Image (cartoon, rainbow, N blue to C red):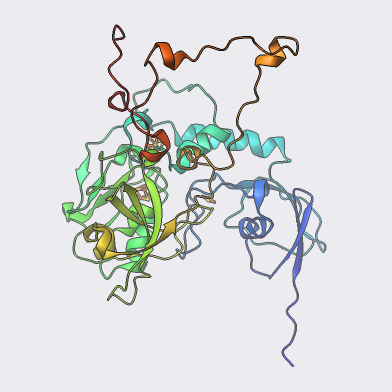
Length: 368
Ligand code: SF4
Ligand code: SF4
Ligand code: FES
């Protein structure tokens, strides 16, 4: 009979979970799920060696283990610290952790541009979400921010180094998925930058497009989709195809408006990690509906603006006329549409893709 594996009992934010020895605190928290999961900007479960760079996942170990209950003297990176039996950890229950996380976000934003309104990553950007949830509204930084020229690093990928947070995910992706890594982090300290070796371009491999999906910010974007639309105007649809590359999972999300496919990405889970990597042929070359077997609308589980425009489970506002009239019903109700065409759409608004434009309404006389 196979020997039963001893599990370690860990308490995170007062919730107990049992995990295998060798599990990191971050993954133990993911086993619990919900708000106790620390944010992670550099760790990526599908990439070996990732983590330990961004410090957003810091937590406080208040009890080291059953055998040695002393707390750890400093906050630790939960993606790199493995659990011990009897360990107790504080994440959102620790004001110290929340304060430190604020500081980390401030550091990540020190050189970051205020590009969100024009950035292709906006709406699905981990840094945007992190700043919103853990950041502060102002900056104390008074020095000149470092900036870089945008670079085409290959036929399909744009690098905007100013937005990079040096998480190394793209470097691990190129290392582990492609035959020949041609980019990396050059220089050291505050001079570090992502760049290609001698400006070589990232074209000669069929899996390099995955760097776009793993990049948590808008530093690496898809040149075939750049500036063509905003992510919240597109409908994400699950689709698959029989891909001839055995390393490609062939399962994708098509970002569509009407019948037009604006971009193709891998499917991401609730932690923003891809479920399976896809090849460049599927990503950049299959932009026709006939290339795909469409499965249906994708449920975006993250609390992003992408889900915000989908009117599921809408509660209609209550009828208030009688209420404001002390329970009396009005004798006469005037229908504004019978006297004016203002706000009278020419089309059924629930049938159009994306927001309504002025062209969906009649020209209102006297209204500019
Ligand atoms: S990378 Fe994210 S935070 Fe930075 S400009 Fe783009 S959307 Fe905004
Ligand atoms: S380009 Fe993106 S994935 Fe690569 S190190 Fe910078 S932030 Fe990370
Ligand atoms: S996710 Fe742990 S250090 Fe970045």
